[in-house]
Length: 326
Image (cartoon, rainbow, N blue to C red; front, side, top):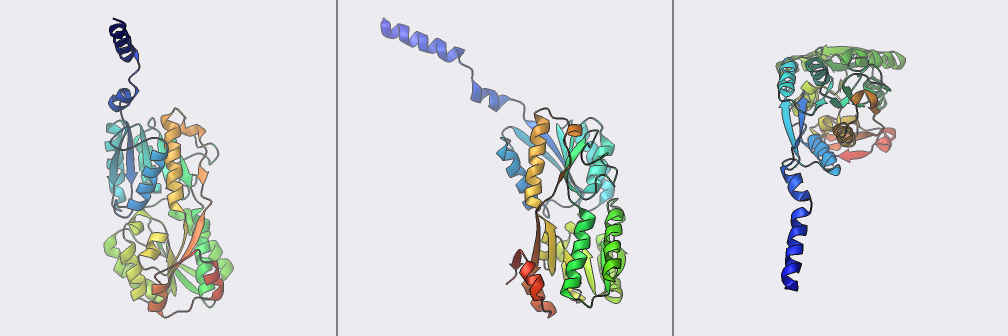
């Protein structure tokens, strides 16, 4: 009799106890819309950093999280259409890669929170009102894009103190390029180097652009842009084929470019995940200041050094954070 009463009591307790794991399993998953100007393959490692950052905050795809990915593959004309798709899906938050994607997302919605994983000049591009108080529905991470590329010019000058002519690839469809070019040209004047901007909007313009670069410059800068980031191997191959020392983002250097001076993007993408977590928990983008990148790295591709037959100055080698292609 006592055993029967005990079992009955246990049964009632089990029925009354909250079914935590069941509630989590059947609860509605949060949905993130991801809008990228580049390619899925080119950004695979950084997207993985973002996903790991989300996992740090308890979000796992297929369990309590779904991510709707939309990639423009370097064709910025597609971004407004892709942004509208994400808005129609009524995602909880939109995460963007690159300034053009951030602009497209902002144009598509004034209510869905937007987190810019990383952009160059969000204030100058008109995406946010200020770094301290973004306003509206947009926040995220940024880096001093103009200063970064001006520093790249300095490294090219350190590589070759006699450098007098440098080219820089510019995508006119990227609104952030104007501020970048102003910063680089200002540094070029101080270094007594002429700067030749070369406009590139499509992949089929790459070959002709580098033919011009070979005639007008002694080195080339390849900045972050969805089109360029989607095709680092092709750009690096053209630079090397035309015997042009070059500097750009890390993936460009890994694809064969000579140098990279770049932001620690994996760290920034994990920061973006932290911002998403805050927003999903109720924070308003307008109240979250734009975070600034603080980690930078200089990388030298030794295989390309040998292929170009150049000598890396001791000063530059000593400053390198990493040597690859040994």
